Length: 210
Length: 210
Image (cartoon, rainbow over all chains, first blue to last red; front, side, top):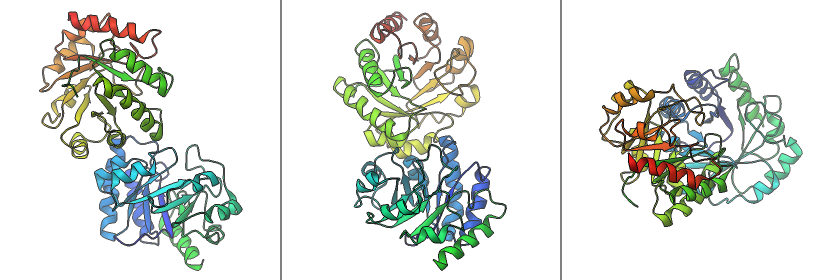
């Protein structure tokens, strides 16, 4: 597997992608056009469907050497031998997650405010997700948007690579990257777009310029 | 840990029990009055709360040598070192579940119809949950109630111990046990009752007579 490259991070949404095959098609179009890492996040799906979708995504991404991260469900990540796990503040604690996944799998953690980033055990995780930068409709119960100034403030506390997330588009990507994160994560900027390949290309160009 | 005793199986509901401490109190009152095994099932809770509730329940039940089963989330079961896992038809497949939990932990599987029980890999699981016997309001998207005749039919196919579940009360417990299951599982017959200890005692008396 390639080294951790957060520069353009796709978080799949099964509703926007219209199901399992739509997620696979979207992921393939995206990674062939500049996306470097893919996360499965499916808040509305039952565990069996997470597993089946994860297995299909792994089969599609492994030949391309693209890492697959599973959100929240460490059992699914272990079942499909995903590259890593991403947990939020309401998921399993990162020390527990690390114990369950071992040393080899990547572990990401979401933070949304100063208190959370100051409490991060940086020796346990591989990367941070910071956001939401802008208002988002892709995540249930998302915290309030940070804005660029607060993103800039939070990022100063990080001791590992970070990816910004939340409402980021090709128009705002450069401004976000200027805050000192290693990459941007997107959901609806690719998932559900008429042409996900083209959407990924446009985002990739912005990332490369920044 | 004592041997697998399914005779009176409590499935905790965090809503009926009013939260984590309510689940612990209910579980303790129940196991001190005849409940032999406890399952944590919390469809509405986030993973962190599952973990915290599971940890609190394990701390309460371990000294009493009462097994704790975690529904669906194998990562939580591993994190708290639960006695076992219970999966449904929409959770991880039982062969995958067995691989993740190892040989020592118990594995239960829910079945609701003939096709499902005929497809069970009995070499992989330790017990079956069969139901719902009667209509239930404790589980989201529960299949149609079996009734006693269909329960009786299904149970003939089992090659391991089974517990019946779904709307069972002290009034119906004896009739259900006559169908050839090793135990009854209850949710609302104990959770949310004014006196869970007394509710457990009454159920235990019915089980012992049957």
